[in-house]
View 1 (tube, one colour):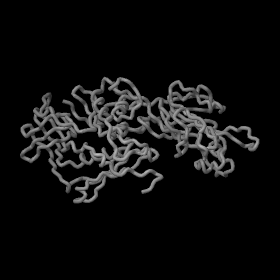
View 2 (cartoon, rainbow, N blue to C red):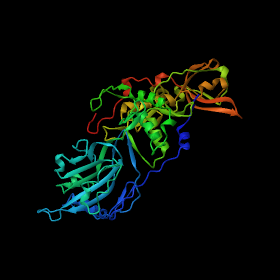
View 3 (spheres, rainbow, N blue to C red):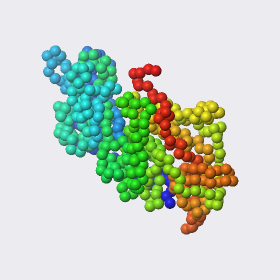
Length: 491
């Protein structure tokens, strides 16, 4: 039978691939990863002034050398800022202003290919539609701001706008990188429109296509199980071959993620239901893989394990009824048996965080999940859980409910040693434990399992168990709680 293994065990066995660096040589411009240093960057503060010609600006130091920013990759959707790689001004003829200049600002946002869904200037969504950009149509920008978007294909041409700079040429395609270029001429009351001194572009992007083992095709998805598979197989993650993965387990969990869950109150876009487990966000290539993996798993209550064939498999996200019963005849002993009730709970409130697309795609604290019965005895004992890749309040609450059940079990059994007759329990998601002597006959989740060997002989199985049942995964829309109010609304 398969053995449950923690993610950390997987991480220790796999080598982290190193992201390749790009070097483009030309006339004083170098691109390494995301960093560009160019002759024109010394005019940074002057470029900012070009947008606000009538405003006085204090002198500022300009950094022309800085650490190279790591590459960023989007899975699902994410609102991403950028790393500035070009910032310069070019004088143009204006009969009313002999100092008039055009500002050029380029920023790399993530690796591609992606789909650009929306363009933002600062925190403000512009009227530009999905696609390659163009003149920003919102009246406040006076028709003087253009955003050029590149989605990060390997054959994308160089920026037509940046070709106006002396040190930019057609060979500078920034292959595989999603980036934007802003071209702007001076604006009336520019300091009010761009208080930071320059138009800061952010992009809402949909990530690259991911392979779906259910169809055999690659397409955009925010299905949490499919994106986990993507990370396990991508060169910036674990680089596993599909032959090393139990694809059926991912198909099964992907179907669970696709299940529609009704919403108690329609979301601000009017949706009355949503996928059970979506996954949105990004990661950088220099992050610890264990951190990225933990976020991906947390979005769906997932767990990786090694199956009977030695393949990496996944489970979780729903109640799986046990198929094996442990009885007293199999038990050789245990390290500790804890029996608790409301008076012994570790915590009675879970404060949880998710990413809210209706709160500027920022980490948002949801309505806490409370164990009211326990609070009546112990009071409020808080803990915090991050479900940062969950893009909805309802999903975050569902995950918090599961975490409450797992964190405060009625019974906790550690170091349970079983005879070889208990081998079928090894690696199972759940088991039934029947101990009449202790008044226990209920279902348990298997949290950890190991085989105990003596030489070449298998002598016993060792498990850690917590009591758990289907109620942890049952969901009523009435449990959704109070979604945080929108930024411009008040209760």
